[in-house]
Amino acid sequence: MRCHPIAVVVAMLSTLAAQETMPATTLLGAKEHTYRWVPGFARLADGKEFGNMHGCLVVDRAGNVLCNTDTEHAVIVFSPEGKVLRSWGKDFRGGLHGMCLREEDGKEVLYLAHHGRHEIVKTTIDGEVQWTLGWPQASGIYENEGQYNPTAVAVGPDGRIFAADGYGKSWVHLYDKERKYVKSFGGPGNGPGKMQTPHGLWLDTRGKEPLLLVCDRENHRLQWFTMDGEHVRTMDKDLRRPCNVALRPDGGLAVADLAGRITLLDKDDKLVTHLGDNPAEKLRARNDVKRDQWKDGEFLSPHGIAVDKSGAIYVMDWNFLGRLSKLVPEPVEAIESGK
Image (cartoon, rainbow, N blue to C red):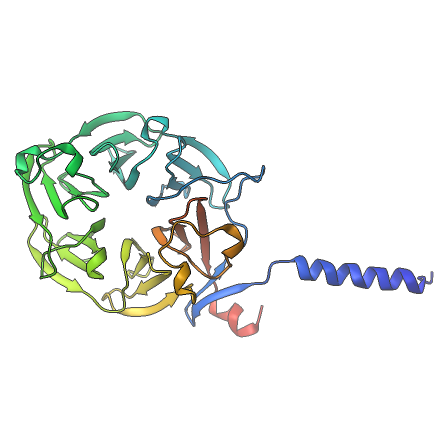
């Protein structure tokens, strides 16, 4: 059966149009640290926006991603494919900023930092409040709770709690497992152990002894401390404004840099590469960038970051509409074959 010439042309044009509308593969990084940007990840089917994202990301043991927003959906749970599974947190609207996921007695629990409520909160994985921890009045640093604006929380192996006052007076406060105040360390400054916006916290268990990693954002560095708050070391190379970190399967770190990029460090905390560095400085570290200025492969204001067991990286941009992106490791053989 012969095809009519016009039908052939129409078919060809339709194929070309389909190819033009298909998202191009966007690769970031290099060699064994190459990632594929997943286009259209985490979008709502009705076209609505998630609302302001200004917090953290964690991945639960099922592989789902928990993400903060400033809306009444303070915690949104996404599948690895970006589908919204559920949400909760109406009472946490406006200020839920830090999350620490921990397993206790076989169950996953969350420790939350809420700068609007000036407190640390422990909840179940579904948001049922277990307890709250208010401002550290015993420290003598604050005149009232309004001066205390925690941005991050971490928990030591023995249950001790660290709370970072990133949007307040730049101290980290230490409590024992019973939530009794122990001490404060850090404080404003740029010398070793001092801080300017201790924005994110992470428990580093890669060495012989656990250490507390502090994202000392406005000093453009990472700092490590003992479980008693003693300064150990500093990494201040190749970083702009680090907000949060996540552990990669190879033992290296992925750093969310508010100034428009993700930084990968190796297991010795040396630079591997940068991902998605935004070439437009005017779009970096801004909350008001509209959707028509977003581009696949370019970050705006990376604020939260998480890595799953497969090595996929999830990134939250600080943005008034809400932007969540996913990067998938690209096998070296696929890159070399051009697939």
